[in-house]
Length: 334
Image (tube, rainbow, N blue to C red; front, side, top):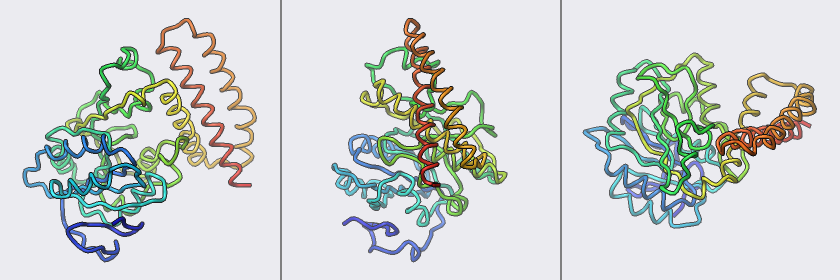
């Protein structure tokens, strides 16, 4: 019953190639890529069932990226409860899966979300009304609160935890509605669909394995901003990113630092248009100095608080990720 890349599976109609779909004039498309997280996806779908619609025309588009659990059965279960259509893209990569579905999106606005969130009851209303208030803008960011298990240590849940955004995808600027100078990230931002169909995600960024270059959303938004588009923050479009205990171990948090470093180095090399010679200089001198510095600081900070120690361990792993990414990019050019 699965569909190949470029094919949409809609249980209310026959299989149709993407290019043959009649695009409807609806308000919002919500796009989610998922892989083997049926339990958390169920919570996401339940929260969307409870979201108030108030006449909003919307669709939920889910692309399964090769799940090996009960995800497909779950999607069939919710077809009658949500305006849901779904497909399968077996080639690994979150952004590859997203890009496959983008041509078929029917909403004027596409909200990019994830399979481990719980949306607020007024989430759809706030996205609809908020984007209506800014008709000349194309990039929007909503509020993301981190949802911690009750067993989480207090220093991790503290608001001053370093790298809160990178580790927990928390996004909560202390500003009101309006233009946001930074770059949003995480499972609660939106782009006008006409823009998204022209500027897709880079498929060499984003989740695809345990080690990957983070930052697919950041790279896309940065590229759009370079074209003169601005970001509008809508603080009332809120959801919670539900964090599982197994993703809050030091190993997993530092792995996120490593992957974030890979993504940061990728974007740096692209932004500065580094030549192979410049990459080799950075790989031979700059990054080893950075790695050595953070390794030394990490050892010296063993008597400090867990948050301070973690901060230097995170920076060390980020620098190591930068080194791997630069090494891979150089190898690809040789």
